[in-house]
Length: 300
Image (tube, rainbow, N blue to C red; front, side, top):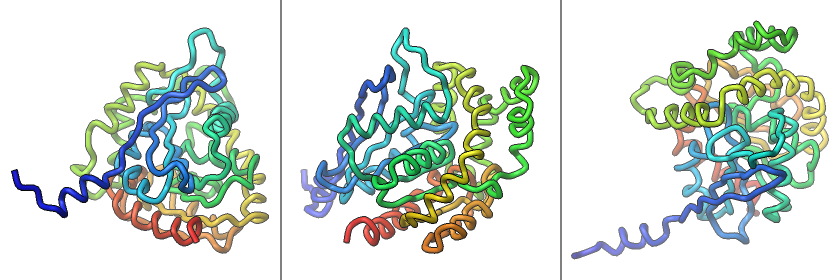
């Protein structure tokens, strides 16, 4: 068999992605990890209707220069709570577990990629430990109230009046059809979206339980109440920030991306002609821009 040297070299340099589990505070955190252990760390935080699986292609692209760690948040993917452990599904608790996870991993400084639910988790980490954050990439990870579309109306109602009826009205956000819609809405060519993405996300909902996600939907209003602390962090520390946004997102509108520049004039904002899960259609472009950004701001 003849193997072209160039092809052999490319295969030999392919980053190996490890799939591991670490128990922290009664939670078995599943995570993906790749790249040189001595390299600067990039922490990838996924969002609603997803898991670290959304980073399956991005991780190898970053791992040539960076030590990449992508955990599944509690309530998602392969992460599970140890039987007998009482765990309340709030964003404060999600952030607390991920913070403890970074400590257990010995990670002292890291750049963050935040998306959707991963954003309020990451924002809490940044406010608590600003000295640890070397850079921020926000891919449709909202930080400003003007970034919330009218699609949040039912959730706003439930936050204001957390009745049983208002909670029940949010159940539809966790159906298979709605999960698929979040992947395909605003996408020019839906055939680019692999069906495994929403199928795996929905399988996790069925395995872990929909009530977990109902709790988080109701708790999301607490994130908005903490925006002022986050904005002070942006003003005081002005971390290198790249907001790269699917501009057709039905939940987080472009105004939310532009708003980063209000408190951090150095923030860079770029838009992609796609929907909420921009990484599924524009993954290579995101990886290219992210590497250029990180190389400029994290590796001198």
